[in-house]
Length: 326
Image (cartoon, rainbow, N blue to C red; front, side):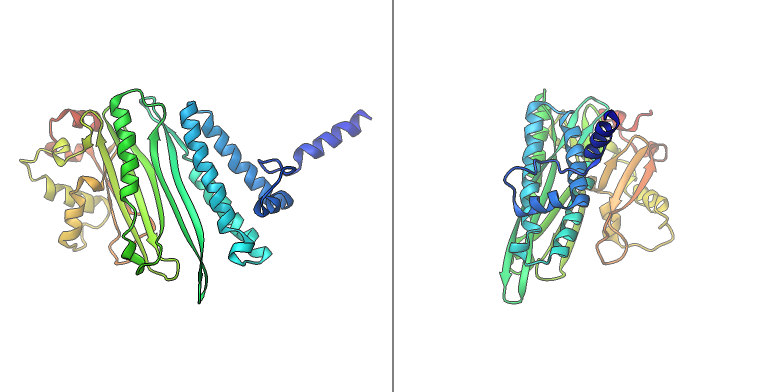
């Protein structure tokens, strides 16, 4: 009898289960997740990642994270709703598989713990709606993510949170981009560098049109000097009395394997803009788009070691923090 009980418990515990209560009143999407074993497993995996993020945050940070989760639930149910979109059963399963896979990717970095002891969590705004057109049904969706310091203890950290929130709002596309139609937008970020006085965040913004193939992708880096509540300037890193612009451009192209390629002034100018710089412990990473006309899925990068830049660097205190060697 004991063997049978243990076997029954083992079988019960190994059965796939969604993160929510399948006995409750559910949406049609939730019902499918409960009834579909692989989707139940995916739902549980997403929830496990989310719960791990919650454990690292204060109550206020947890509330912010839960707000993003609830918005994702609403987006998932809208995008993959058979009734609203008119998709077949197999298409609905495929839609949910894609949404869960994408969500697992974003939740890998839902909380970043810095060397200075900060916990930076992922704030999100998401929305989706169905557009009914004479030519068919299309989906309009927005997914905007930005970083926030959990439980900020200093005015500088509070100011940084406010800056990142405003920056997220300013990256919304021009309404004319799709000829008056709603614009799909995806905005994501990556924490590239943190120190006591500087936080470096790489941002990717993608705009597209629901009813066409028109697409635009932009990459930039926000380097914030916390003590001054301002953007990092070229003078924070370089001695502007030197030939640092020409030298930086040449070194970046060399590190990128493009030294023998003839480039235009536009690329050379982009390389010398602080909005293209991602600070790193081992050097200065410059983020720039590819050499062709099509926007790259990921920006091209090249890191120039601080040692190669030594003769051009400023003596400003911010430099001593980021380059780590004098």
